[in-house]
Image (cartoon, rainbow, N blue to C red; front, side):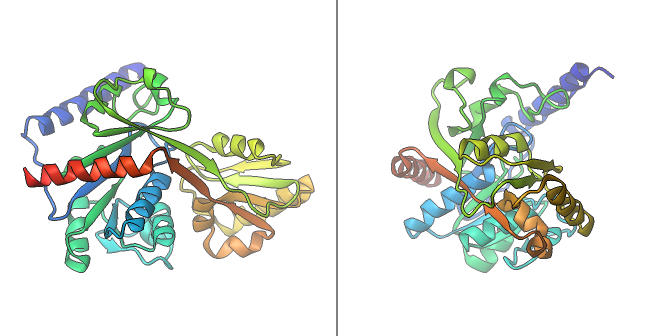
Length: 315
């Protein structure tokens, strides 16, 4: 079947579902604590996880308690679980593990995010909930909707012919639209919207000479471009599917690639380090490169977000 036709059918289904929620025929369930959703329009690669970490750090700096609710994409377990930071991706998902380790805050995974929030409130009280990848998860009510967009989103198509999970007009549901990865405001319908800007980069340290770069992320070419912009020129590269769970064979193949290319070591992302687990030490020397995200006028942005949440809660 023609991909454009399939995208049209997909768009019709998405539009009908959103209309059911907009008109109240499908209900969202509310938690006692405030819910801040962080989501996007496209399938992966917009920086949701780094932004959740950034937002968590900004709340921690103010002494505001919070937890994170996530689906736990890629995990083999089922149901609602409190993430053990020392656990495995197969149990909790790679991104929830990364968030839990970076923020040292409670992270709860569950296919049903309302049930995840109920568990979080039973354990930690009705504090702020950061809903990871929540824009399309309308079964859980939220008090503030943050949507990240990239430059690619402005010219992309709906799934399956493109990467968009929703059309650009869905941004009307957002409370704040975050321009990332060089996104230009004129590419999106932003009339009357609060617009935030983030700068996303990497922090490479102790990168071995002539490294092999490898990763299993949504947009690996962006990571490669960032490395080169930082003066790191890999001699070989190996890309895997997003959320790839590494095996012993993968490690052997990477070591063979290192020998063939006479590389001095490896460089990869934080998410891949989580997915490597116990295989991490077998690839030494290995530089794990964290993502750094900065929000312009962060103090004012957080102030306005908390003010909107308080007003909505009062009403």
